[in-house]
Each structure stands twice: as structure tokens, then as C-alpha cells.
Image 1 (spheres, rainbow, N blue to C red):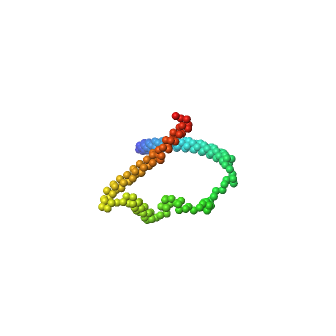
Image 2: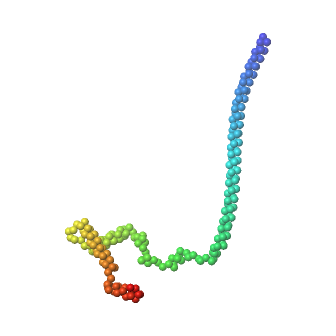
Image 3: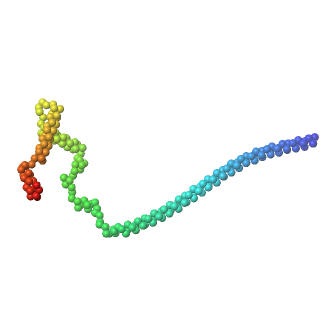
Length: 205
């Protein structure tokens, strides 16, 4: 009985040891996987740190280049200031510029003739401008009526055609009279005699 009890205890202990060993193996596997993930994370972090170092180094180079450019710009500005001081006269030698108030005091006020149509239109209100346009149209119509009077009982179309033909005949007569006055001499004998005596005086045949 004692031997059987001891054997059973040993079997139980061995079973418990096997179970514990199995659990430890599982835990070891989990630890390995977690350690692997941590190593991957560390490698990625190292890679990011290297990239940041590269970016930082590039930024430092850019900052140093900008500082050099600023120094060059300062030197160029100082050179330009020296050149302008040498070429331009001093401020006390320059003529004093009159202010706007002084220019208005020395300048006479504009007369009514100097004010153009744009200034008049700016002063007029829209109602005044409309009345002025109506007066201009009435005046032009009255002048046209005096130049080409209408015939009682005549239609507007017939009146317009007659006025256009009258205007064309008047312009044709005026052009013909101007051409005749330019081509016809005042005395026909005078230019011929002048040319003849001028040619004899100069010894031409």
C-alpha cells in the first residue's frame, strides 16, 4: 500500500511538472514573439532617428547657406549705399520741393474755358445732362430744318430722300467749284508771257 501511494504521488508530481514545463514553453514562445516585435519597433525607431538626423543636418546646412547669403546681401547693400552717397548730391543741396498747399497758392484757378467737357459732365447731375442732350438734339434738328425745309404733305421717307439728294448735289457743286478755281488761272496771257520772257532772259530757245 505504501509503495502504491508513493508511486501515485510521483506520477502526480511528474504530471504537474510536465504541465508546468508546457506552460513555461508557451510563455517562452510568447516572450520571444513580443521580444521580436520590440526589436522590430526598435529598428524602425533607429531608422526614424537616422532620418531625423539627416533632415536636421540638411536644415543646418540650409541655415548656414542662408546666413552666408544674408552676409553677401548686407555687403551689397552697403556697397550700393556708398555708391549712391558718392553719386547723388547732399540733401541740403537739393531744391526744396513745394508742398501741395504752396503749389495751389501759386497756381491760378482754372478758367471756365479751361474746363473741358468731362469736367462739366462731372459737375452736372444726370437730370441736367439729360436736359442738355435734349437741347442739343433739338438744336441740330432745327439747323437741319433750316438747311432742308420740309414740303407740306410730304412723307418722312420722301423728305429724308430729298434731303439726302440735295445734300449730295450741294457737295458735288462745291467740289467742282473748288477744283475749277484751282485749275483755271486768273489771266491766261500772264503765265505764258512770263514763261516766254523768263526763257529768253536765261538764254533758252
